[in-house]
Image (tube, rainbow, N blue to C red; front, side, top):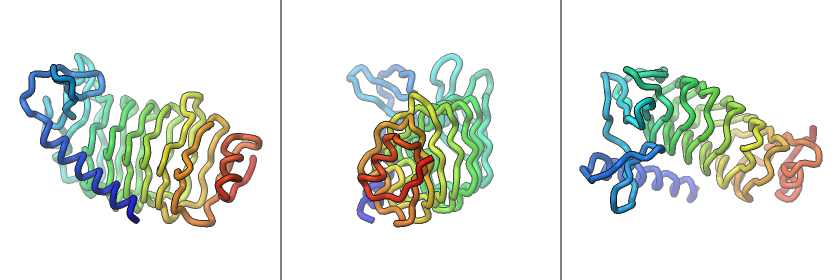
Length: 243
């Protein structure tokens, strides 16, 4: 529980920091990640939209791409647009839907990056359709989404950050096979009370000791015979099936 509380505090601090720094009027230039880098060398997380309508606010990344930074709507079933005006939506920004009470979310295939806490603390979130071109899933992206029982991760995924599914309601998950996705980070499934099965491909060659900390005792890892994941399950005393 202590680590979940720490994650909640980190989420709150991150959001407050973003809000306090965004739109600060610093003399700065935009980076490719959607932050602003000042002449002093520090980064400011984009929070104030450059473009907006009644539902969404966007930050201009470059002359072609946008990052979604705000949700002004009240709908619980959210479909993120793939374009806005003459730009393509490629990034879901930090904490955009944090604790917004959404139930379903559809992410367009134009999105390649979901940043930290993007959908965190939506306790009623039950259905997520991710972009088929997603490459990066940020820290605590689905933290404390307690009604989310399953999610399909695309084969394009190259990196998953720590705590991404911490304290979520996941029951099963298949880790996609991608030569660039080689690691399951720390606390990825920490305190997931309903987690029963995780399928791990042979392309995973590093798993943090605490990736599955405080998960149910009957959790089973489905692994490739002779793979690193099989060795990991044996060393950690986690139930496993070799396929």
